[in-house]
Image (tube, rainbow, N blue to C red):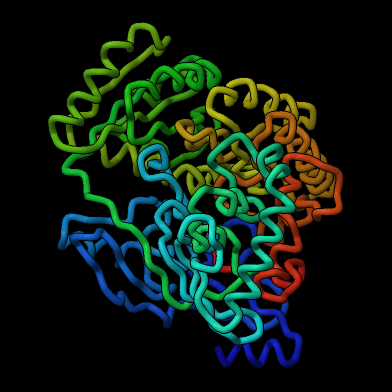
Length: 463
């Protein structure tokens, strides 16, 4: 509160950081930087209600370790679980590989205690029906509720018509949550990247820890074939389906360290799907049985069911290590993260990938396509030499072309990592022509916090 009061008095922006592991520049910017790592207390866990109250600097792994005593965990699974903070996960609306089971962090956010830009406190939570005033407590509750209600009435039809047709959407603000029949206003703030309020206490829902997770690996001649098979695999109820693009990875010297996966990695196939089932032993075995029943129709050239826990562990270790492996490959061209997590509906993902490949090929470069096939969100890294003028020019041109492509597919520029400083230039204000991105209304920030979003586009960041 002291920092926000001083900042408000002198007109200085605030930049809030969690673990600073995100990729779009949320943890940098002008003004006062506030690090949340000292706000790291787990305030309470209600095992019966499956609810945890934490300060924003609590690391996800720490919360999971405490919740494990009750057979619970915080479901959204970041790749940086050992570093990511809960405040950062709410600020960035993190998700991870298992979002088809757990949803995104916004779905687990129950209540937020916050400090607004003028130093006043406000608590946001569930509303009684569509009465927005019932979802806010604090000295500015009435004014905030009135502003939000006016925004909801003004924007309802625009939100219905223009919101991206995918659940993976971290660009702009979560205004779709405002028009739900029983809004939870804490969820309107999820994904706001520190631009609307500073979180001081967070209440989240916990999930039961699965007794077991089993994995299968399927290789395909092309990435498009893998993504077409993904649609059939999703009907079997997996907890995750991850795509690996093998051709760029084969250049990495350390790929040979994954010796337990040799049959998959030494094939000539282009793509691998890692398919996971979780639950009780009976549930996971049943999941694999459902996969076996359709394997003959998937077009996979090799199918491996990993029975050894070491194989399962190494498969997911490889998935998490894709970027370090790519960074370790020889050559001047490095994987650049500027279009890193575009997202479209899974049924459109195969065609989207082909068009994305066409864009990078027109610039004479390659890209690595890896990520969350189950959710339609791929981590795409064009390989560019950003020490050269041509590499920088290619980056700018590819970014513009991919932005247009995402609009054509009614997708999201950011399916996972938010806008930050790097992507805010691609998000038009509410006065811009109608488009898929128009729903990120800049006036939202002034309604809630009295601050310009452009001045505060740094935020609590995590993957």
